[in-house]
Image (tube, rainbow, N blue to C red):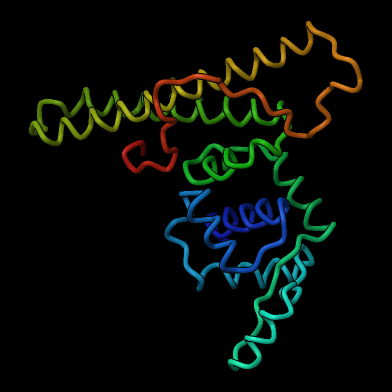
Length: 227
C-alpha cells in the first residue's frame, strides 16, 4: 500500500467515526475539511472504500431514505450506499491515531493527523508536534546551508524563491512552537488544578490545547514551498 493511499484510508476511517456517510459526502468532506485531499477523485476513493470493507473495517448499508431508493430504482440507478464504521474499524483507527513515528511528521500525513487531533490523546499530539518540529528544523538547516553554498550562483528571482521557501518553513516552526507551548500549558494547568470527577475531561482527545488567539493563519503543512 502506498503512503498516500494509507493517508486516505486513515482520513476515511476518521471521518466515518464521526458519522456514517455515502461516497459523495465523504469526498466533499475530504475536499473541504482536509485540503490535502483536494486532488482525490472518485476513482481513488471508491477502491479505498472497497478495501476497507474487505478488511472488515467498514460495512455498506442502503441509503436511509426510502424515497431516495425508490427514485433511484425508477430511474434505473443504484441507490446510494452508506458506509458505516465497524467496531473493528474503530479499533483500527484508534490504533492508527496512537502512531507517532516519522511518517506522521511528513507533510501530507501530518496534515491528516492534525485534522483529527480532537480525537487524539494529548501525549500523542505532543509527540507528533515535536516530531514535526524536529523534521522542519532539520529541513530548515539544510535549506540555509544550501543557500549559503549557492547564493553567488543564483539570480535574484531564484534567490527570492529560496528565501520564500525558508520563510514558509520558519513560519510553520513558529506555529508549532505555539501549539506545543499551549499543549504543555493545558497539561500543567490540569495537573495543578484538580477537578471534580463530574467536570474532568473524559474524552480521548482532551481538546483545549490550541492557542485561543493568533493573528496569523496556520500554515498549510502540505505547502509545496515548505519542502
